[in-house]
Amino acid sequence: MKLASPLDNLSVFKTTTRGRWDLLTPFALVGLSLFGVFFIYSAQLSVRGDNWITQLVWLVGGAVIYTAVSLIDYRFWLSVAHWFYLAALFPLFLVLLPGIGSERYGATRWLDFGFFAFQPSETAKVAVLLITASLLIRSEIGTVRQSLGVLGKLALAVGIPMVLILLQPDLKSAIVLPPMVFSMLYVSKLSSRFFAGALGAFLFIVTIVAWDTWRYANFMESHSYSYISDRGKYEPHTLVPLHDYQRNRIISFVAPDKIDPMGIGWNQRQSLISVGSGGLMGKGWTEGTQAQLGYLPRSVAHNDFIFSVIAEEKGFLGSLTVLGLFGIVMFNGIRIAGLARDRLGTVIAIGVTMLFAVHVFVNIAMTIGLVPITGIPLPFISYGGSFVLSCCLLQGLVQSVWRFRKDFA
Image (cartoon, rainbow, N blue to C red; front, side, top):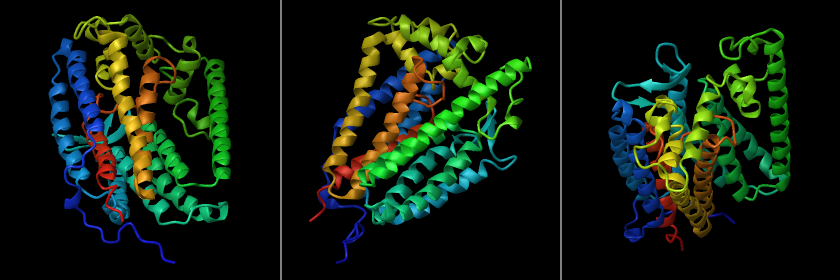
């Protein structure tokens, strides 16, 4: 018996679905976006930065993308997933070419067009989501034997952009992809043996990284090298594909006294002070001393550490409000995944929700010292044009799953 294809009788725009909008998520996203604009302004008030205006412009553009993607039947993306994936790979290759990619803070992650610096890793996230959904929907999954073929394809499809992203290097963008893919595999009823094996592989990798970091610390101390000024000395002596600055971040988390507190450990220490000094109600908007006086570096206060600014100026209640809005987005994404009438809708909604969950958890945990600093931004709040647009596109896909869930017989 031939199974019906999700592309059968597909019209990109369905007039029968007009008016069926889920308003919970858009309400929460608007609230988060307003938090972002106001606190980007506050974080840069002392230098009279205008990034809050730029952020507002990108949010308006993102709203257009969100609406447009919401109006398109999500099953349409199944027919163009491979083309979108190939299109997203091209700038990932391009940014690595000498003289083309724009270098910032020691990494080549942007294509600079003058009026806009595009970060290819953001479109790569969308591409990996779509190609993973496409492969899962078009394949038989159940037993280990049935799953091996699709797992091999997925390893290649996800591995290529991950390697290209790591070459930039951009660890933060690469580490959010595996949790998203695993969540999509989980709701696809993949064999439990695979997840047991994946957990074992994860623990093995963590052990290797921990052992390598320990060797790195011994190497630096035995040669009387400085963790800050002599970075790169250890890299030729190991096969583990990490940079010394990334090892420094791990050491600054587990043993901060080994690293210069005025160097790599400075940001996290000041972030902890910001969060802890906010109290219940906070010091008031634009009244936070850590960002205003530059203790929380102005280069990161408005993006990676924006939650620290919110916690200091609006306190526990303001932080709880932000977490509550993110909670609405997450739980509503899971609800929409459960209400989807086909496996494609479920896979897309869960994948997007997991991606956002990882961003939120790691960013906030980073600011309060629970995980090493990775530079993962906070969705809709941290400053960044490419990131805002990709977030809006992804949430538009979830809205599309909701809007078109009833278009099945």
